[in-house]
Image: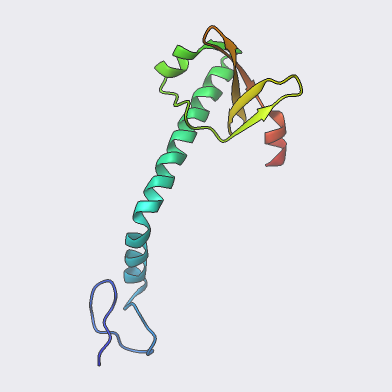
Length: 121
């Protein structure tokens, strides 16, 4: 019985445990299997990068206090962040990598850069 390539269906020659006729077919097959889970991860990572860029741009412009609507207008998605740090004073900062914010009230946010995050890299 002839074995066929799992991707293209060509007849396999060589080793008896061979599953693909070439590296290209092996890559095509595995990429097709992982496409859905990779798309989800890629989309979330894109949102995190966008959020980080927005916070970074505002922070490097010298902005330390901004209105929440300013972040919304720039496309910031408050559902996506990398971690939360609670200070000893009880303030919760939502971080997107090394840039974060905390709510001040009246829809204003305080921006902060976590220098400890940079040291770990």
